[in-house]
Image 1 (cartoon, rainbow, N blue to C red):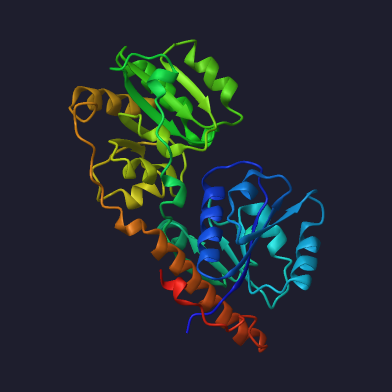
Image 2: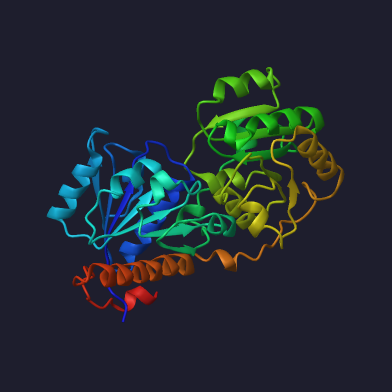
Length: 358
């Protein structure tokens, strides 16, 4: 019998990137399936506005004593599962009562100081699983999935940027941070792209000034800042690039695949694993030479502009399957926790309605 969980997601960030979108999508889908779902985060964080009406948001105004505040919230509102996202959340969730199943998704990677006290870890690639040496809890591989927000309104970037209609648009999505490798992309683009191409980068972050300087005023390079409509942006592109120096999964790659775009990606931990069976060009992370050569080869081929959109098989990244796997893992961890503590389970035991099977 399926059970209705009382779930508390914890995420203390003020940005809106892949980890945040994962949390939002998971919380919304769990609530739609009939679970009692709450999210704890920073007061005024952008994730609050993107949660469904069926999800309760608790905003903590200060970063002090988050663990104590979390314990008080759980005491007032009984919780079965605390699901942490990113290191600050793990530190707070570690202080939750022992009767609560403490889960974390490895959005970045395993760090014993943050994750050792979790009862269960969700890995997003096999390499993470292989590195859990000494971890005493349960672990499971659950691939990321295409988020519900993957279908946005169309927009016309060429008109917005006053570019000729025949301009070849090369694009990337990601926080402007050294780990995301936009500096490598800009350098490779300036070296290899034809004059009738433009580079558009969606995202914001601390590297904006350095990247602007690197572009050296070249009018073909456009830093567009943060936008919610990722899919609308992607539909304008002729070629998608994922230049990250490190990437545990790479949600934007999935979204580019959904739009049928030709893709060049760095062979980082996550993408190199799940892209091996797809017609995607993989290059060495951090190498301007490799990315420049791949761009030159791609521009000389018919993969850009003249080629039809590609038809990727995205069934392995089913949202419904991914969420179901997470809930199944909750049940496994909760059962083991019950056996270890020899206490009655916190799971409410109420069977879900047929909506859980939708």
